[in-house]
Image (cartoon, rainbow, N blue to C red; front, side):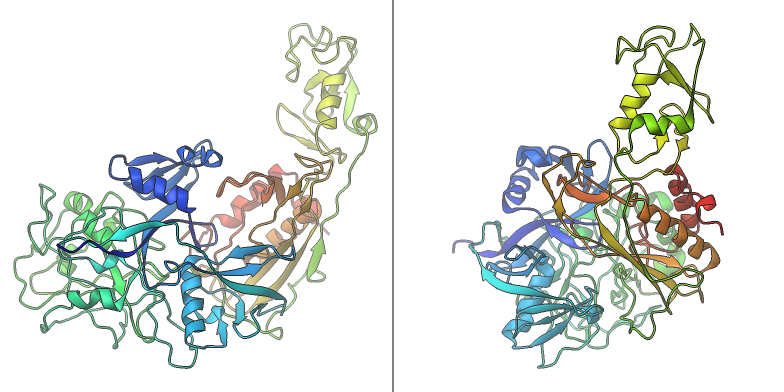
Length: 612
């Protein structure tokens, strides 16, 4: 028997807040590969101490952060040996520090390499499924932001692959485990629309890895999976690509024993393994992976999936309980509730996949970007007050208590108010805040103020009432805003307010956690969206106040990556997904404007700050 040969490299990836699949480091991927067959929960701290707070739930394909409970989707994707990633090709872009480069996502790397090999000089990524506002010049090796025309250098490099090798099984191989560079044929010109991914491929057979969550399959790997020609009837609510070659996929009743002896049954592991074959430029496009935007455990569905004619052994109804056991605990009741129509012996089954998240609106020219009604200008800088002495500030907001109560404690030092301060044995003076009337030792509340931003505001540690204007420690930056003619979902005809935050890395100041140390600013500029309605414009005014008071961002540890000394959101939620709500950071969300107003009020930003 010939020795097994590798068909690709297995890469574990996680979905960040911008909808991009980011690869784990090779040592992390190898750590997961070694343990995935013996455990459904893998603690990543065993491979990297900086990831001690992160655990992978392989049953639901999510990453969970201890402490915050933040969940991120993960997937296992196999890039074929002929792909750019498996060959060690890396495309990188230069940040604001000369000579410091960052890698593009692997899917984008494969896409760029395809264009490079086919001698395509220009790539407009805003016209691809990646929907990024950049144009790459592969002749001059530059990346240009479409709106601002800012340029960055890019480079192509080659490294030795250190990711886990994937080997073909002895039996029939499911092409879903293998992903091609992009599944796109370049014909000498770059066209918008679809790029990576394509049509659903594969008659479902054995699946080697239960938790495989891969995207496109290489055309060469899919040859053995071409179905026999059968006449099929397809009923679809969405228009499918006429150029796709679609094998039939039949859905049958659940097997109570969990086996896949019936070829018409899709088990949960097989559902996870479905992927797309390389498609032509006219094929239906997905986000490089059919599970993008789906909860782990949900079935992969395509408008191109159909049932061969003549299948008559299917039930006319599947109960909700069966549906959940059949397709996983995350299956929507809407799917199982319509099985009288969908799963019928006389009708083919046609399931449709959601489109990938839409993070940015279509490219807009300067002529279509207008100032926001009722708001002067289109940009703001953030500069805050600092280093106001505690004694001067307390005079405005406290009164001295002549006879402190004997039965109350100072909630800062936990000593009796009638006794000496636990912070300063020589202090017996007690202050009372004017509005909320809570009392504290003078030295305790002054020490609390001095340990903060020293910006002139005092926040009661008991009830959180804010005295004065609260300022944060957001690094210097720029906030821009303008309107676009397109509308966000849920607000038809209202147009959109786009906010762009720009912050650069630098050195932490005295108000930051680690003065004198460097901090990073990942993911900037960040684009956020509001409806251009009366309520949306009011929220924009509040966000402007928060920005000017340096409350929007702070410096700390990222809940997404665990990186320390980096710029993070400061508990004021923004909508960063424009045309969908796949990541819960988009629209429609009828309660968002109310909720964010309440979050701003917690920071001391209220309607009284924007009244005329």
